[in-house]
Image (cartoon, rainbow, N blue to C red):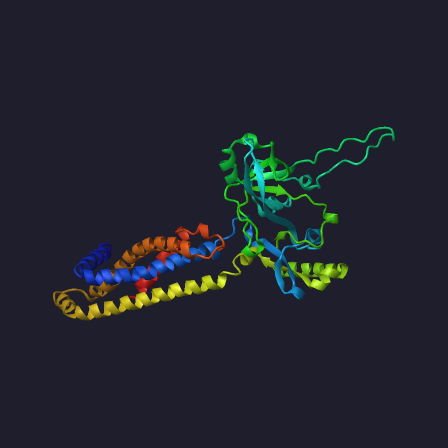
Length: 414
């Protein structure tokens, strides 16, 4: 009897709700709109703000940018020559990688060129982010050695003719998994082959894991899903100190904090301003931010405000349905009196209202999920360009758990 009583309560509640279709439909639709709106907004918030970055130990990743305070300019790409100073003088950072993206022409065997997105990266990028190379190999340090142009004069006697210039060695590239499948059909024979890329040749040595992307804020102007990754070839000792081209990502050592890293890069910037007059004139400083926070810096306030507006809509919906239930309860006083006179337990009678509230919330939750799926499609049409990771928005287990929480909240307020 004890175990079957709750099911009897739900059966009685369901029959009662069926006898009042107008009330039931109004209550379910009202709650469904509130739950659906909140779920759709939370699905965006979860994908953009809450979901961890898809890298190894993402909480330890930092973005290092350059600010020119005397020019009132922020998020300036770092000049290549400064990267070596940052690497040498940041003890709390275990590694710093640089990336710069561009578009180049890739010419196939058929002679037809295709514009592809190429990320020029330091050779430690994949290892620093913890990205797997599923075919071939990762970059090696020597892949980033400066390309050799024409050879110098021969070392023979003066009568010996000079040696002919040697062709520049090909750049070393790794393909994205998606580009490998699209362009080469997943053919492993492309490994260790050279292709015509831009004005030179490129040697394909590996394929990155599926889904890998470069998650930088839009202000960095970094292609999110490059087709190819080329080892950046620079003479770091003589690299430019003027032209900023690199977006930098670093990894904190175990136990280190972003504040400690900021103190170290401040010291590096002070040293560079003392050595280079232009940097002092510009007021060049380095800024360290957690990579996840930097990615959503511009959109976080709007998303948080949108999330609270969704919660507010749900509370209004719950208040409206609660008012309807109070009106209905007053109309059923005579029915409850008859049931009590026929021997109905006061405990059983008291349980009917919560059972009906739970049935309404559950029905509204299911309808709300359908509305949320539709709402996500609508948000795709109106979302601002460059919203980070918006294409990963979905109704996953986290969103389902949030919807269940909303159903329980709605039940408790009715």
